[in-house]
Length: 603
Ligand SMILES: CCCCCCC[C@@H](O)CC(=O)SCCNC(=O)CCNC(=O)[C@H](O)C(C)(C)COP(=O)(O)OP(=O)(O)OC[C@H]1O[C@@H](n2cnc3c(N)ncnc32)[C@H](O)[C@@H]1OP(=O)(O)O
Image (cartoon, helix red, strand yellow):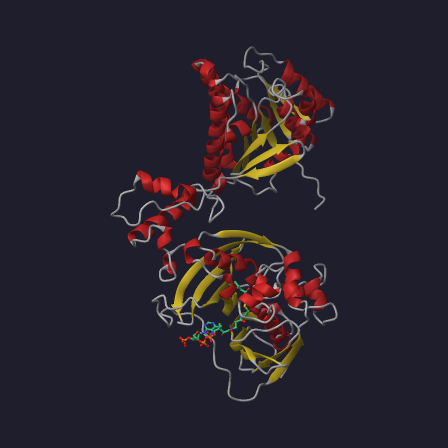
């Protein structure tokens, strides 16, 4: 972790390296062992004149410190000559930092064609020329790093900079395409959005701010993006004043503007849907490639084909026709530990340290943990506006969790949500929702959720399932092989709700009363996770690697403080189970089973 990131053997071209940002980049790369081509035409900030002094003095400074550098004085519009210098003097080119730039700021009313053209030449054509000349070298050696330079003016616009904004915005699109074309040759292209106190900004910023925006605070961000350990490709990173952050495109959930393919889109429909078109808070997504962007359009077409174009037409009866966007979510050991605490794991338990201390010899994530990140997908569905779900009446009905691989202690997950069907049970409706998750290595879990909305039946839907899905199984007729006991504590729901389900039903007495309960009830998933944990302890040496899947139906609520008794039967690799409350004798999870892999029987 503390290994110094070096560039020994790498050859770097930095354009516009005679001062400001480019100079800071060149000095840092040289200091970390790279051979550097210090390019600078030596012109003014407006792009007039030329001089060798700027590049020479940076080369001298690098050499004085024992580094390797050569100057180059060509304009970036002749980028091939700059790359040629690297190849001639150092024999190769690994990293290209397109930094050179000039300004011709004028309000648009005063902007001339020449102001426009010269800015385009230096920024856009210049970046193209150098990248084009370096590209064949990168492809042949299957390695290359390109940094192109944009600006907040390019991303957001800025008064007096229409020429510069257009060029800097063009550079973002250019970079993103190079990133896609270069990926299979291990050529990574990223965009830096710096804000530095350089000669370009001297006239724009007040002197104190100018001094605080030191280029040296940005250079390490560029160096990291160019290092072989950095896997980023196609990102836009803003860096300034000791701060760095990624920018990305966000697209609103949007609106379908007509009900069916045979309808026209009217101006009035656009007006009426405008708040949805521009609402970035509901179902927004972050496409990074045209294929991803197309997904939502195809969904919209599908809805129009079925005459469901208007989201007001979405009801329980046709909810399964709707596509929900993928969600990306990260988790880490903290969430895994908090989840274990919420399931009553304590340090005094035999396996406690393994679930509660990330540095223990055998840190483990409980196998039912996927319900924590996946819970938000459930709320995305149930919150769908035209459903008007009454959350005081939502109860967890059934749950299935299948692990395809043991869970990592931390990961970034891509979650996919599918409404399988909504069943009409007359006394209520059951939303059957599948959420699958992939981590960086591929598919990792599949879950199936049944949410019971009391009082929302009789909508004309079908009562029984038409799709193959997981079902509870009847418990064996014989007496249980083992009964595993666990006393929940009064505060357990308050702790469990920190694991992705803050439903007030589990903490707020008045909300619980609206749902028809005398006091807040325990999360179904808490009872469920405890049962699986006890079964794993009993039949699988507390080893999550031996877990395959679990299913169970919540048949009665549990109140925090009650004692759970998990009735288990051992049938080869399957452990059928039921959970009952000791104090009342009521079954609270029925039809349950845990499937194990190569379980070690303790019977
Ligand atoms: C996905 C979840 C994410 C959403 C976010 C919120 C999550 C959490 O915050 C909420 C919770 O954790 S709630 C706590 C855990 N759950 C519970 O306590 C529910 C306990 N179950 C009940 O009360 C009843 O079974 C009850 C009320 C569910 C049903 O009882 P009745 O209305 O009396 O139904 P009944 O007459 O027995 O059966 C009618 C039909 O419904 C089916 N059914 C029954 N229980 C079901 C259940 N639990 N899940 C799915 N389907 C169920 C029956 O099979 C029957 O169908 P059919 O008529 O076709 O035979």
